[in-house]
Image (cartoon, rainbow over all chains, first blue to last red; front, side):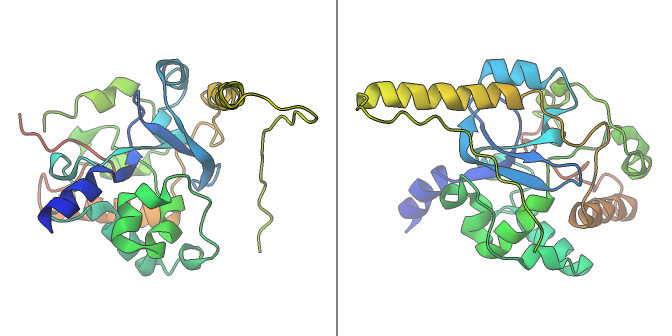
Length: 164
Length: 84
């Protein structure tokens, strides 16, 4: 049983990864913060990354997928990804009816998606409303940053994440 | 039901067979062209816009930070758990 899980989970993709070589471009974030999916998901290369990094933070404009890091990610709760559980709870708290709308989005990675593997179609209903966001200024404790709507930050901010 | 735009980019070559390898290369080239053009796309303008779900998650994150100093995730994002 353990080996089956390991083989299977190695193939699972995090649908909210960083813009980096080898990641997959799975969607574009629209004007209202909702994802428009790209099918098939397209592999990100150096050329895309360089061009994308000349504008606003790519993770605020696009959604990327890459191999789930499981215990290498701070959102891993030991057996599962905490982000999608938190997102579905948030959707229920906001009573967002769009999150249960059908049909499901035309996502290019569904069968390999960590979130779908965990929560099935509930994940797919909530997924379009999420993107990778980091507080621009962690020293402020987050609150003032949350209220600040315009965020300017270099792409490199995502490369300092090896140290907590 | 909202009216949702659907863009599909394709080239039809009708009337003769292409070798599979060439068809695959052309297909990849078309996808690469789409990727390259999308790289400069910014549909959200200058602002980060949060949907109600994102807003709820982020406000919970702020609340957590206020309850437990250092407890915030620093946003909703994926980061390595490797300690320094």
